[in-house]
Amino acid sequence: MAKLKWVGIVDDVSKYQQGEIPDNAVKLKTPKNTADMQIKALPFLIPFVLITFISMFCKSFFCKAFYVKPFFIVSGFLFGFLLIFVHEVLHGLVYPKSANVYIGIIPKSLTAVALASYPLSRKRFVIMSLLPLVLGVVPIFLFWILPADLCELNSFLWGTAAVGLISPYPDCYNVYLVMRQTTENSLIQFYKDDLYAVN
Image (tube, rainbow, N blue to C red):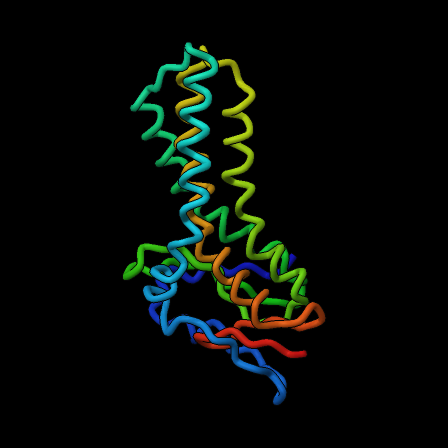
């Protein structure tokens, strides 16, 4: 596991992504800034929103005994937002011991971040990017299998799953960019505000 360091408020992403990149590294085509990236990544939000709401509909329809408890849904949302920091730690777990991963928050875009500049294989980059989805997959799976009459717990799990499934959508977008612009043997590395590949 990488060395994880809490840095608090991040006002300049490039400050924490200052690793060395080879001369033959190629900069990928990516959005200009975090806000632009979040907008362009919005299509990747749609499947996860559909999964959460279709799950709610199907459980209510087939069980005919599921009652939504708004208080517990909101509690699940809040718990899910607290897990955003766990989300960032999960990113860091995939980096090797020699890497430094800086965790903080960007107030302007209301996001938490895990910042590192270290080359990863394309496969490892994909795992690093998508690992936080487990914070949505586990609660939605429990939501599916638990009895419908446990409405407080089901409502809480649904709220937690919604945040856990939706929050990684920018990471999914990064994976999309990497898969389209690199080869299977590429090394992928963040550097300053950009993403690079070495073939």
